Amino acid sequence: MSSQFKTVVQNDIKNCFLNVDEFSDIHSINDKKMPAMLDDNEASDREIKYIGYGNNGMYKQKKLLYVAASDYGNMPAAGNALKLDGQMYLIFDVSSESGIYAITLEAWDNGSNRGRR
Image (tube, rainbow, N blue to C red):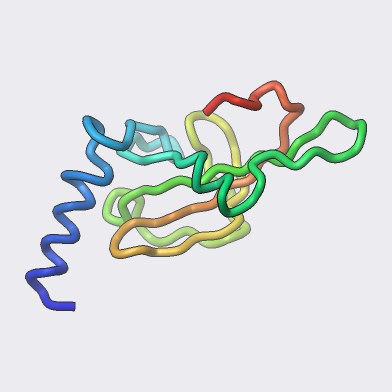
């Protein structure tokens, strides 16, 4: 990848993909506010967001979080905890896509948050 193209990609991350006036919102991630995008549609495409388990009323909730690597810092590892907007999640999977981390998160809940972002 040429240096000029890398610069264009990095500018697009902040000015387009993670621009709070376009696609993203400010979220609190590990108690630090930064632009990020929650993609519920992609999470649905990759796997069912909520998986029910029997009659105990518990559901596994999945979310896909996109955040700039430059805002987040070192790439997190699967299996670690991540605090998103005050709720704790387990990092299920992480990939780095041209300067953006795509972080798949899991949490257990009683279904009361279904349909909420």
